[in-house]
Length: 184
Ligand code: KMT
Ligand code: NI
Picture 1 (cartoon, protein in one colour):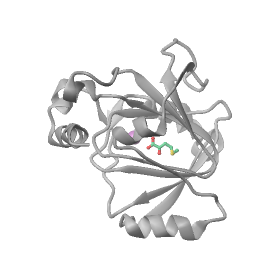
Picture 2 (tube, protein in one colour):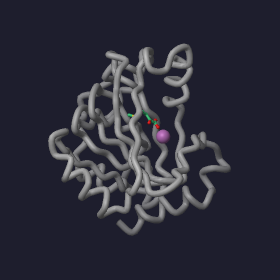
Picture 3 (cartoon, protein in one colour):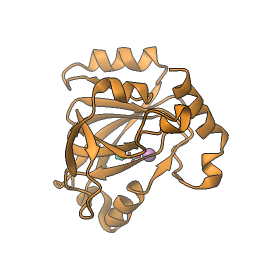
Picture 4 (tube, helix red, strand yellow):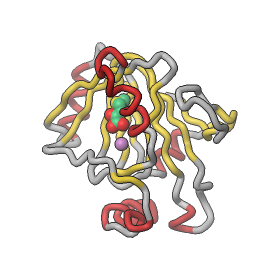
């Protein structure tokens, strides 16, 4: 895992877009994001984390042109649109590489912190990430066009992509997320 401010330069979303400004794990934590490295060989550690957080279900997703066929490029566009979900998005990367971009929205809470800029989180093999419900984010696959991840979830996950809008900004799950930051 590596995190940095996105450079905001136009161009292929699959490139690193590293501005050179690093973002620390504690900043990610303050946004409600949980990160842990669990080697692929340590399935007991994954199972322990899953049971402690009540992630009783899991499946596996492979994102690549081969696995997705003609829908691939359209999916990459959808993944990269700023959105949120009503549930946590939990991913354990088992192969390949990709980027989750998240918005630092603490400025909306206390008016002092948080730039509102995209933070890019680079994930590769063994990285586990939990995005809290209500955080605005987007996903870009890396240049290799290949990532395989285990998706963990509690029951029936609500991963519908809810695009950013003024209405969504005022929604209950969005407000609940911002309130959780305010008390962090
Ligand atoms: C998502 O919801 O954006 C994804 O699952 C992306 C692929 S998993 C690394
Ligand atoms: Ni998402």
